[in-house]
Amino acid sequence: MKKIFEFFIVLAFLNPQYSGAYSSSLSYASFQDRPKLVVLIVIDQFRADYLTRFQDLFLKAKKSNGDLGGFRFLMENSAYFPFATYDVFQNMTCPGHAMISTGSRPYRNGINLNEYYDRGLKRMVYCAEDGKFGISPSRLKTTNFSDEYKNAGLPSKVISLALKDRSAVMLGGHRADLALWMDYDQFRWSTSSYYAKKNPAWLDQANDALKKLDEVTISIDGKPVKILSKKGLSYSKGIDLTFELAEKVLASEKLGLNKQTDFLSLSLSTHDMLGHKLGLNAKEMQDLTLFEDKRLSDFLNRLKKHLGSLDQVEIFLTADHGVAPAVDYAQAAKLDSGKIDYLEIYRLVNKKLDQEFGELKNKSWIVSSKSLHFYYDTDVLESKKLKSADLNKFVKSSLKNVKGIYTVVLNDDLENHKFPIGLLGDQIQKQYLNEKSGDFIIVPDAFYMDKDDNLTTHLTGYTYDKTVPLILFGTKFKKGVYSSEALVIDLAPTINFSLGVIPPALSEGKVLPVFTNTSK
Image (cartoon, rainbow, N blue to C red):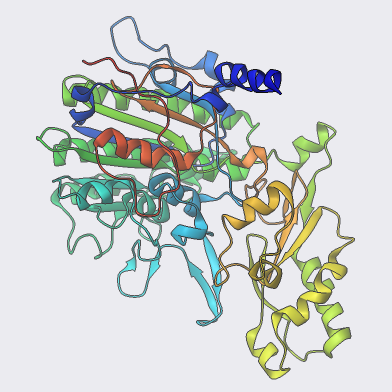
């Protein structure tokens, strides 16, 4: 018995997971010293291995003239977790950005899907929609990292931006002074009255500059495409415009130049837009990543000039989710891969339920579906005096032979705390919300995905969808490549610890052990 005890004592010293050997501390003086500016950069659909695959092609960390590089500068001069993870069942944009900024998982923060079917309203509902303001964070049920800074009574300017409105809103939180996104009807930068009753002058100037691009085209696949179109912005110009606006915000709002700590968050939506179309192994995705590297370098140098140095700024970089390889690529690599056809699911489920409960006329048992979630028509259930649990008894059997389906998860089972065993069940518990989740949910096999217009997608908890980079730059953070576990929900409480304020209200993350005891 004594030898067993001694073994675990030795193990504790050798294994940081048991001993806490990765713990870190700050001097009190460093702890008190808040940065002038916090910059959060999120790259949409940026799998962790984009950085490791292309690292030899990135700009040098520092150029001969003293200018800073892009990704490599951050990778070499930060606390860098190459393979940080999300630990939820489905990874996508709105939940990802919400987890980044709040440190909480969907079952707590209320954002589990980009869109869901509202059984009361009887329509699909968007994660950032608001009946009063159009777009707002009203569906986010907790504070984020910058909200808590303001809640502490500390003065600050908080601005977030992205091409996607949901990305900007979830990063900005409830108390952002301004959240900005691209209006895809007019192709102008926009906000809602939740944030401002009228645009600041500099935003109107930015939109005036966009007018000059109204008729400008680029060649894509040999065809002229307007830059100011969804397709046009899915290439490098989308990255360029996002950084241009961030730089305009810096200068116009004088972020980081006051006694307070200011916050600037930006999300690069373009990476996701192009990734869905072409897949992560396309040459164009390499080209886009290298362009992001160059544009990040420009931004870091602009930031350095703006502040005089980077000593008073903390920069954080991560992603909202990864992505699966395209089906044709996976199959060429001898992997079992394919797409699941929703129409086949509708057909099989309707056929089975017609047999059990009588054929419907001009109706479908399933009223809506999105992101592997399927919702029954409540009017049909009421007319037949049925509950979803009555239908669910037959769903699994009707879909058991569909290729690519690993299992079917039933809402009534989840409501009764009957979760699948192992990792899958743990992931589902962290994301499931009864009022928003489907009556049944399809769990695809690895390398299978739903069939739509996209070449590939990211709706699972598999490694390729949940693994992203996490970078923390600043004088308080110990440089190095960290192999220890890091969850993306650890970022918000870590930022707030550095700022000396409490974590967001529903935060579940831990403070990452990256702090150094070296004072400036």
